[in-house]
Length: 198
Image (cartoon, rainbow, N blue to C red):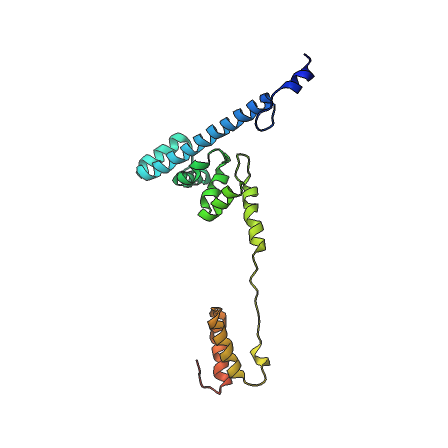
């Protein structure tokens, strides 16, 4: 039997891959899972060191693991370790990058679940790809718009107009320091001849 005939008779894996390719894929995923498991364990140890060691012993601990306790890596590792329970169910999907893991634990529960539900997480996902998930949803949100009303252009019923405007802004919870501040109140007072209706 020729090599070509052997390939034609080879049974494919359930994923449609040749068995030798599937074995390599499986080995890669197993190694990635072991790597992330070990990274998370390191993070948990750092979090525990912060929780259980006094200042002197904590400094000694960091000196012996050759990590700056004030550096960004140590801070990220601590935060990741403190949030191990969020990440541990998804070991087979997590990237082995501290910055990306740190970003994942800073997300709200809803944001993190969105990544899980949308199958964004995988061992090779980049921080940029994760952030892009939220950029597109933020772009779709309507941006705040500012409206300027020149009260001096109101010809008749200035006080009544300003009172109605203030009432409307209040009704729709739009009042801010800018709208209810001295400008609007002062205009109402001046337009009503010095009598305050507020």
